[in-house]
Image 1 (cartoon, rainbow, N blue to C red):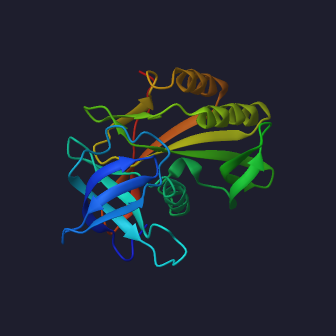
Image 2: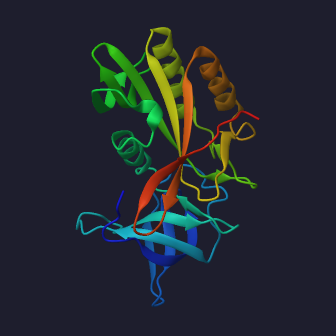
Length: 235
C-alpha cells in the first residue's frame, strides 16, 4: 500500500478518550487528531515519541488528522490505524503474498454470514468452494519479538471465532489472519492474561479446523505492506 502523500511526522504527546491523540509538529504547533483504534494500544507508544499521521481535506471532518504509526517504548514502529489491515490483507491476497489464500476466483468483502449477525471480512470462492477470512490487527509487543492479541478484552473477536467454527462445521474453509503491524515482531500468540475467554475460544477454533495465519508488515511513512509470514503459537 503506497501512501500518497506520505504520512507527516510529529511527536505523540497523549492518547486519550480512546479516539483522540495530541501531537506536536516540528514547528511547535500542537494538534488534536483522530485515533482510529478501539484497543488499549498497550506498549504501542510513550509520551514525546515519534509518530506519523495522515491528513484529510474533507471539510466535514472535525479532526483533519489521523494517527497512523507510533513508536513503541523499545523503539519499534506499530501501525495503529485499524482501518488499514483489511486493505493490506486484500492487497496481499491479490498480489500473491499470502500464498495460503491463492486459487480462488472471487473475493468479496463484508459479506453477511453466521448465526450471530456477523460480517466476514473476506469471502473467497470458486464455484461452491468457499473460504471465510477474518482479519485482526496485532500490535501488542511484549519483548523478545513476541506479539500478542488482543490488547483489550474483545467480545466481538470471540464472537467471530464462534462464527468461523460454525463455517467449518458446515463444511467450509475458515481462516483467521493476524496482520501484525509491529516492526519488531518475530512470532505471535494469544494474550491469555488480557482476555482468557478469547484465548480459550481460539484454541477451540483451531481444534475445530479453523486455520490461523500471521503475517508481518513493513511500515514506513511512504508505504505499508505485508512482507513476511510469522509463526503463530499458543505458548
